[in-house]
Amino acid sequence: MLARNPVHRWWRPLVTLLVFAGTAVLALIGTTVLFVGSVLLGMPTQVLRAVSDPALRVEDLLRDPLLMLFFSFALLVALIPAAVLTARWTQRRSPASLVSVVGGFRVRWLGSALLWGLLVFGTMFGVSLLLQVLAGVPLLEGFPGWWSYSSIALIAVIVVPVQSAAEELVFRGLLLQTLNAWFRVPWLGIVVSSLVFLSGHGYTDPAVWAELLLMAGAMCWLSIRTGGLEAAVALHVSNNGLSLFIAGLSGVPGVEQGGNYPLTQVLPLMVAVVVYAWLVDRSAARRGLYTVVGGRVPIHPVSLRPGGASRAESGAAERVNS
Image (cartoon, rainbow, N blue to C red; front, top):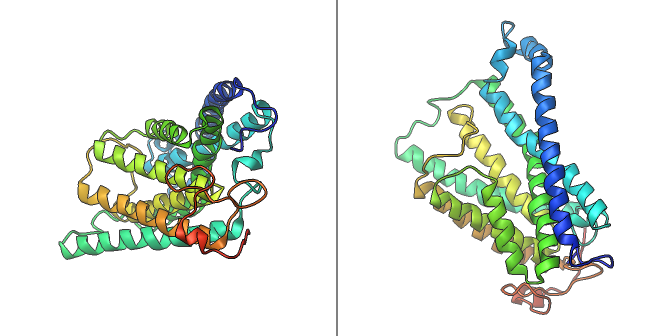
């Protein structure tokens, strides 16, 4: 457990959680104030007037769905400094240790996991779109126009990856590692961090709760099994990014998360999460990724404790960490 270092004491996890809660609230409030202030001062207005609507008013921006979509993702990026500073201050460890057992992102592994994510979730979304077409559902009926859709695509490509990494740094990085240093039982940390992750969303549909809990649990499981956040970040980016691309075809997606969702929309996502987790876990075993600081120790797939190897892990001959 990366949070259980030589300076660890029983009280440090509690202090860590309290300090992070305080710094996160300050970071989110500060970012919101800066954003609203910049809108009131007209800085985004000048840019949008130049490229879009010369008659655009400042008041319109605060109700603009595209700007609100951008802000809903960009706001979460403020959690990165909160997590980094908390790890440094309260646990006296390098912020890079939040990311992986080698201290930082393993770029080639992140790229490989992202390819798996785009393949699995892209296939799922593609099949879903095909079924809608066959059922006669008009996909482009509410198309917002190429300017708005291009803006949505830019948010998906540029902002969503950073937002996803920020959430993983918090929930599967700082929070999960801190809880596991406290409980010493991985599944307790997974359950608690997954419930906190769920509470951070505004969905009210129990089916979506189940899907979010499954996704959070899978990302925790992969983070422990692979020794880092790369697989979780790739899953998060693939799901959020592709969802934005698809939803944008019917208009600028709203930031509200309430309402009911049909099982035909939720169940394919759950299947995609399970398939992705299985494929990426096997890929990590074949690569021989480090799972602890200094080397690879097989992590049991059920207990998530060191010492248990799957068949794929038993057959892995090389230890390639990139």
